[in-house]
Image 1 (cartoon, one colour):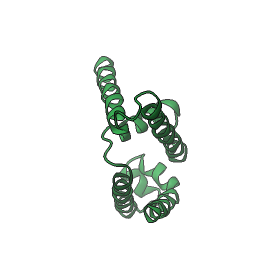
Image 2 (tube, helix red, strand yellow):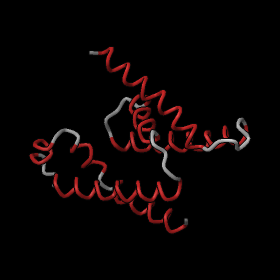
Image 3 (cartoon, helix red, strand yellow):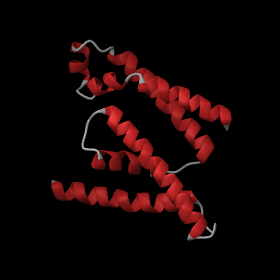
Length: 139
C-alpha cells in the first residue's frame, strides 16, 4: 500500500506540472498547436498517467463505478472555472470528503452491514439520472 501511494503521488506530481498545458489543451488541438503546446506528446503522457492512477486507485480502494462521474461533475458545478489547477484541487477535496463521509455513514449508520462502494454507486446512479434529466430538459 505504501508503494502504491508513493507511486500515485509521483504520478500526480508529474501531471500537476502540466497544469498550464492542460488549460491550453482544453481550447482544442489546433489552438493548442498554434500556441506552441506539443499536443500529441502531452495527450499521450496524460492518458498513460490517468491509466496508471486509475489502476492504482482500483487496486487500493476497489471498483467504485460512479465515483469519477460524481467528483468530476460536482467539481465543475461548485467551482465555475476552467482552470485545471482549481478543478483538480477541488475534485481532490470533494473525493476525500466523499470517501471519508461515506466510510462514516457505513460505520455509524449501517453498522458495517454494507460496503462503501454500494453507497457511492447508489448515490452516483441517482446523480447520473439527475444529470441525464437536466441535459434532456436543456435541449
